[in-house]
Length: 91
Image (tube, rainbow, N blue to C red; front, side):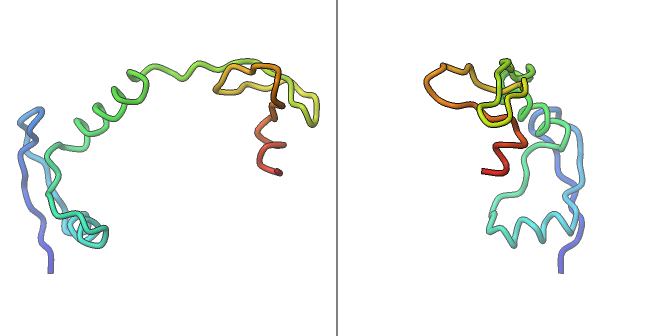
């Protein structure tokens, strides 16, 4: 039903293949537009949007349930309990 298509990335102007399986996936999801960028350019854009590609800042905290020290992606304020990932997933 679908056949591989060669498209040109609007970012780097390189050719890339829009595979038959990718086309089928797009159709299943209801996407009507073909991709405009190659995988490398899409990944680069995503990384840039994701905090400028920088690593997320982590803060040290003490778990309110088990008492062990952990890292969390937000600054604990002290007025609300903070849980380590193990205790948080159990809640």
